[in-house]
Length: 143
Image (cartoon, rainbow, N blue to C red; front, side):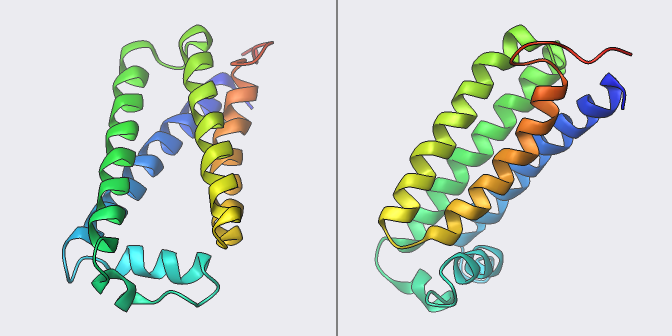
């Protein structure tokens, strides 16, 4: 596969990040919290349902996580638009993604939400495959 293909995969991952940020931001508004509610229901193994957003602090916590993820995705989109998939720039962003994965996944397991660590690992893999193919950690793909 060509470098252009892997750049498109990275660009899609950036938009996926923005999409998840929007999904979780919606948890702050009753009636727009269905997507985040479904996600929490899935990663909790059915233990957490939409009524969890009625608990004090839960709605604001989830929506703030969404806002941070939305900002993170928009920042990466700006980087992508400014320099494409330049390995020298994305190497540092790759470290940030890996740090997020390690901390978020460890905390997910420690708090009883191991399925969230699984979803994090899938999300990381969707980033790492194009990152490796684009040479963020070493040799670049030719063509």
